[in-house]
Length: 124
Image (cartoon, rainbow, N blue to C red; front, top):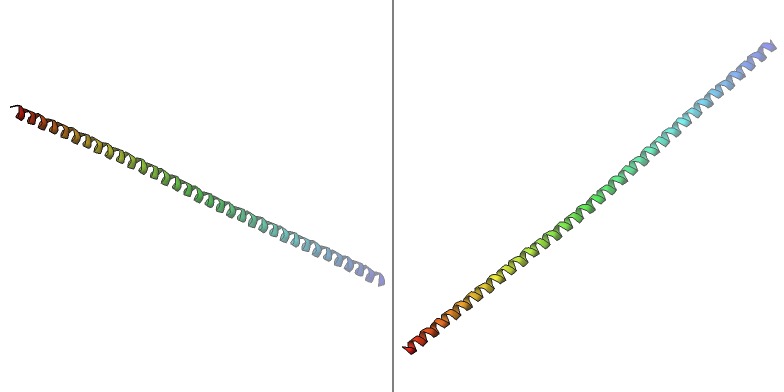
């Protein structure tokens, strides 16, 4: 009877040890799975942050490029307007000078005619 009890006790102890081993393995596997999930979540968060930073940088660069293009277009428009104004002023000045020269020539011709008429009248 004592031998049977000892054998039963040894078997029960071995079963308990086996159960403890199984529990330990399951706990370790669960911990490893939790760690892997945490690492994956951290990696996903880091990737999302990097993507957001890249998008923000692209938006800022785009805005800067658009502002530079607008400034260049404004400068070109101002230069073109100034050139047109200078050309118009030049043309107007040239026309005025031509008109003045024509008026002076007409006055000289009229004066000469008057002088010639006066001379003819006095001579006749």
